[in-house]
Image 1 (cartoon, rainbow, N blue to C red):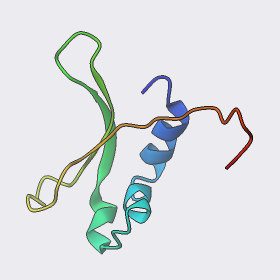
Image 2: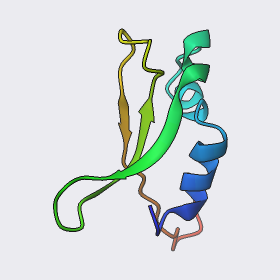
Image 3: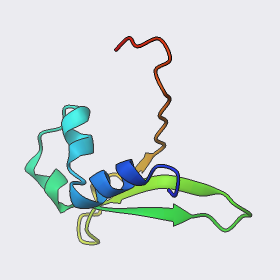
Length: 76
């Protein structure tokens, strides 16, 4: 996630923010860890993966693709 270093740092420090954004307030979400992984293919990189602890086999894995663009109109 070289071009998205701000988001990488944010999710690295606070992985539970994704769950706040999607409205999942389960206390188990605080056990996730965040990493950026490269798939065994030329230059194919996933922006981020939130992985539950190894003992929590019932929890899903979340794959993140982060897109950011400059607002040229000045609107929010």
